[in-house]
Image (cartoon, rainbow, N blue to C red; front, side, top):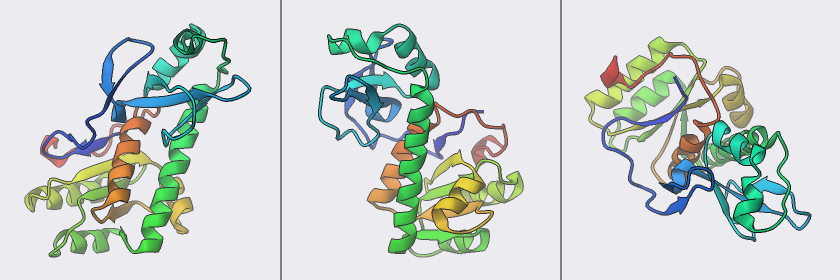
Length: 216
């Protein structure tokens, strides 16, 4: 199973902008693409925030697509200039996405938008203003995840489940050990975490553990 941000009910239509993938030629929504730019030295770098200056070179957000773009020198073709993309570009892209997500989780914690721990998340789901973005460590035990998925589904919360970070990575971002369950209150940070999790899912293959409760 590939690590995903799963929409538990409706298809996520939050991001409507589309770009053309330089590898396949397909026009895809931005939450399935990664933007790259060539720096002043001609080196291609991932632009996870899509804010760096220069012509955007868009590639499907998968390790396979990025590797093909490097091996076939498709960045130079798309840029219409000689640029250089190193063999580790897919790995560096994955690390950049993880770093951005961990930074956003830290911001959510400091702003009070983050709920930590199974019991706290369950109580929050049952509150008057429940979070709709669940964060689950993909290497955590499946039982607790299933219970939270079931609770969100039973309460008809139309929740999104992000499951593409390890418990160690979550602990690093949140200053705790063994972080398995968390939730983020609705807002810009929750939307950005979902957006980035969808892209990160193309760079990580995870064990087939937790699933959407509807598929259990």
